Image (cartoon, rainbow, N blue to C red; front, side, top):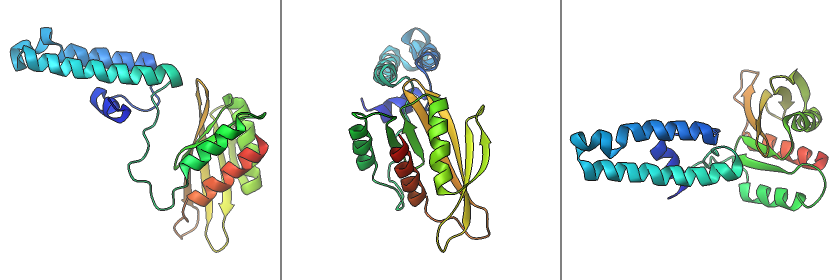
Amino acid sequence: MELDDAVSILGVKPGMTLAEVRVVYRDRLRITHPDVRADDVGVDEAGRATALLNDAFTTIRLVVEQRGFVPVPPPVSPPDDSIDLAASRDLAASRRSGSGAAVAVESVDTLSIEAPPDEAFALLLEASSRLGGIGYIDRSLGILEVIVRFEGGPSCSVLMTLQGRAFGTDVFCTMDSIEAAPPPPFAPVMDALLEELQTLG
């Protein structure tokens, strides 16, 4: 079973831990198990539903045991301004052999840094200061804002929030224009941030 299908069947959310996934799984089993649903839908149908939940849980459990959390599924069709995720992951993999933290793009707006949150925050702060002016810093909450301006475009606020994971730190990024004009595509900002992080890492 594919991970996306398993996540959909079980109804879990990205970022959930194995303990949280187990709670959802057990709650769903209490609803679909043949001992509970045999009178409503029949033993065979309840058995099929339970088997499907078991398969979904097994698929998710294997991934969560390896990564420590339910990963964010890849976008079905990335927007035109998306960046080459495969190339980014290849570059990050090549960096793992050297010293420093490996950095990879997980999705159009998410980076993964193989470092604890405090180290990842320090790297992100340094890299961001090279891109623009730091607008806001909150280390305790893992929030960083940088104001960037691209030639011919509006000034934009890039807000980054950090989330510690079992094997590193995820950085979720959003960008909004702080002028009347709409923001430019996000991919160049992500490219520049990734390049700075890889230089520092």
